[in-house]
Length: 410
Image (cartoon, rainbow, N blue to C red; front, top):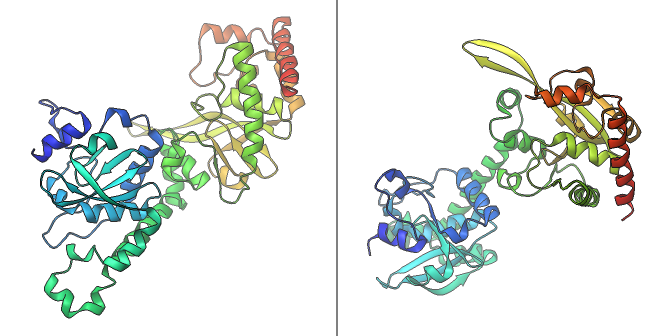
């Protein structure tokens, strides 16, 4: 079976007659796509991988997501040891290709197989129809294996030189891998580093990638971590704050679902709900002050620059910002590199404003003065503004506040 056919067989993909570039991308079996955290971490690792030297036979060593090159197939051992050395997810499997009888290496996480030499991700039961396992090299044993076997050197050093330069060559593999790890870590650190150029870049493009770049410098976390269902805590802040957040978030989610049939999730789908998440949180936990303001930025269209303001809402406790929409906990000083505070409200002040505006989770200052919030200029929005200080609004708020007291004690 030719390698391109093998790739389709292992992943249940079919050769595309149109959009043929898809035939050369990383192929993922449909049963694996639900494991988004693992796939996000792998994508992150590949994107941060440093440039790797070509082998003796002039083969480019890459972890392909696109433009797969089948010359990599014979480099399975090298690829497996490189990836497993920089990732916490994968063990190495040494086995054989049952059709050729030749040694082959791949990576395993639980029952998921990643073979970078084929650029496929699939399930173990499917992969085992072609490849047979001989032995497993656990993550914690990889370095010792490299030291004892020097198995990477054969891809870069000619055999006749190894024997004559044994002392210089015996450490080749571990030195080679250590250098890749060092460069990989530099790339990781470079992503979260902050200088004036990076600050200006983020201010201009913070909305273009679901705020990932902004969230990354505020939390010092990997992009793959931020794409998951995690609240990212800056390294300078004690992670115990997550226990407090979870306790409050669980109460709020329960109230909103049971009483209003609304999904208020503090771990998933938070973008776009900054007002609701932050207002409800301060109602339940008065130690966190509600803060509203936004992010100033510029748009550049047809050579003309215009100033704009992205309205936003978050929470503060002591010198810490918890932004439930961005799912980050970060120092105030760092947060205000990008964000501008306009108003802050205690729990009591928040309750009193809601008594005036009812069940409207919004930018308080702008709502009460009739200024457009976001892109909302609907007739319904204008009618809500006209109902400020009405009995209807007061009743909505009193109902909500009584439910907060009820669920706080459940």
